[in-house]
Length: 525
Picture (cartoon, rainbow, N blue to C red):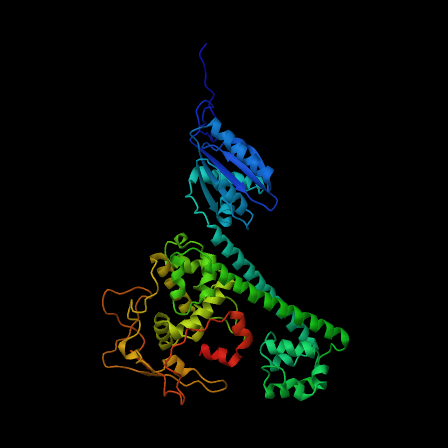
């Protein structure tokens, strides 16, 4: 009787199975992380299970169970190489990652991006979304795609990232506390917002702590208000008059208690934020010496900004090009032509805005670094002048300067060399300053309440005008759109001393709370 072989039906998927007697060369291990436990799946190259799924609790017993399972698989398949893929959702995988790296097993450990893991899971398990299917999808991705191993994060760098994350959370809490205070004052003393641009300023908080309502401020003696530090006399008179005629509807002892409580909350969050910022700097200074230390050599970037950039970048080798780093932080324009503006006019096609992607804290500190860099950094100063000469708004030019800073960070970190202002002739010879003469930006800085001088453009006979690609060193002489020199008008009556002070690095919150609105607008004029 002849033997027959069963033929699979048409359309059936046929997988090449591995005989049990033949050892496996690779085993995919997918781990879906969670707060209290992790789901682990094991797959063979033929997409069949190499072992039953395992729930690993976040404790010693759970980790030992995972170790025993991996050792058991190694005994069954001595030639097998483990391809482990971990879902990096949140910070739940940190302990597990360090534990796996300590095991003496042949493995390739990769930390997957959550979005890529979700897309891969939807492609292979479109009708199921469970911890098991997510771990199976990651195990399949590990054994089929063979992703490269993720570099281990040094313990000091992980600690820096932890402090930076806490600072970012604290900054958001401070902003929320200020918003709650502002919301309450809209019904207790609404005129305050018209007299004071920022209710989180130190003198405003001290004023509200002593006089938490419009009635209290109106009944106080004007001399008592003028004794509050940093409260101008003219401002005190305006507040005293506005409080006496306030239209606020919340009055009495209860609103005063609420105002004092919110003022104390704002002061506490600001103090905690300042403490965390100092802790971040101290943690950054304890890092081992490496290429990242050259970031602080870039004019405009202080120690705090450098610490935040290093904490969020971790390893510059994660980014192949400067544009990848720029895209990671969202420092690029996007078209926003949908809808209408505040006056009801349709937005014209091609309207560009800064991308909302990226880390908020990094973007805020890059903005402050760019504000300082346009005065002290020759690369940013030349870029800013070119863009202003083309008619760009100040905020648009500052966005380009933020992008330029990331290019410089990428360059100094990759090469391991500090910033060299003479590496490229950013500014023509006509723009260079003789020793002892004030810089154009210093001369153009308006005094408080004074009008900003208007910069006039002067041209030279050999000037050419067309742009060139940004951030690329040309092989020969190039032409620029901006004139070869910028005359910012006469020098001030009392020019500053020739001693060059280091740029002052202010946190974004300090800048907004303590610098008057008119001066802030002057930076972007």
